[in-house]
Length: 183
Image 1 (tube, rainbow, N blue to C red):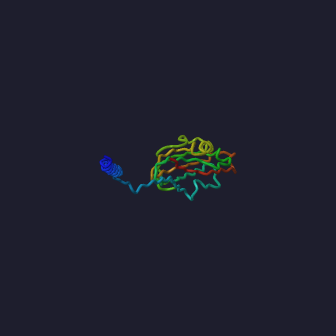
Image 2 (spheres, rainbow, N blue to C red):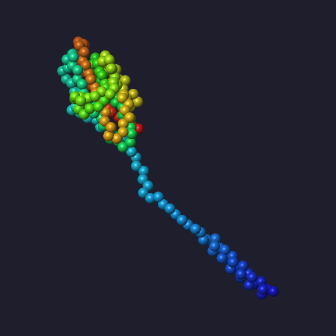
Image 3 (cartoon, rainbow, N blue to C red):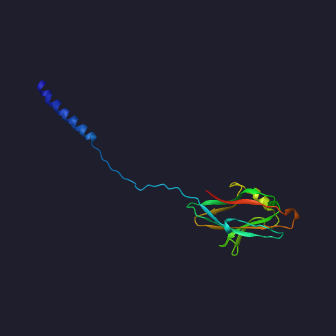
């Protein structure tokens, strides 16, 4: 009898070994997605002003009425909002000057072909430059929110008037105009 059990044990061991081999077998399939990239967009704006300054007036007399156009072009790859504001405001003449600010289109910084699309400040023509400059001092308070996309252009027309005011004699005003684009 002992002899009869041994062949059965060999058969059981062989079957168990076969099962172990079958457990290691599997179906495998793969797929891939290559060429994955992630690129950040850009925000970029440029401005063209006459002589690279918004204004450069000396020896102004009552009635002087300089008008200039600054052409801004948005060149970023993603949409952004552009606003204009002012830094480095100094001098007492800004409190005397009457200012008007419009936006529109055109191609010349002397405003010869300017077409107004809207008034940003002082439609009536009686408000002072200083009030405008000090109200718009950073992005948050910036004026003229313009939703720009790539290659959009906007012209900003700035007009000043020196009224007849003896207390303006010898005064000056200075400021830096900033156009900032943000998303």
